[in-house]
Amino acid sequence: MENRRRVVVDVVLWIFALFLAWIFVRQGIAKFSDTSGWAKAFRVWHFPVWFRVCIGAAETAAALLLLTRRTASAGAIIIIAVMLGAMGTHIWWGRPGQVTSEILPLVLATIVAVGRRKSFFLRRQGELTS
Image (cartoon, rainbow, N blue to C red; front, side, top):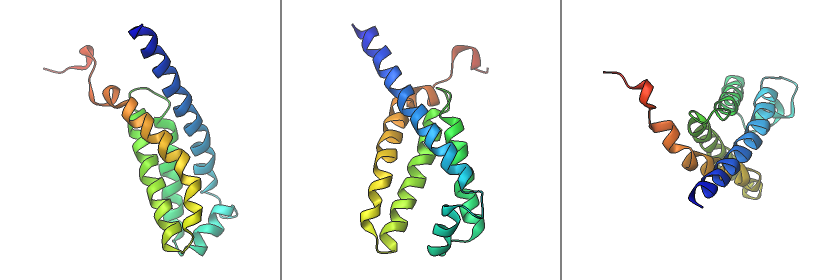
């Protein structure tokens, strides 16, 4: 029964990680375009172009990190940081109702970060150096 539970948890973590990767690779790449809706939004929020590109790079890197069990926790932590920053931006600009769009990715990334933490922090036996 314990093995079955572990398999179910692993499958759920993969579903969440793949969903987040699908979302953030698309949104991260979109932030590289000067003609995207993101470019307009970042201008409205008075963020410089380099910041939009850095957020795009962070989101794209996070999406790629989510694709392996070993690095999924790191990718999820990056998403958590970006989502908290996005929520802060909405609140700062007087639109706290817009923070709802960050809640689902924030919750899913937190679940993945916690669920994959052991894979991130523990080394495999063959990786130990003397």
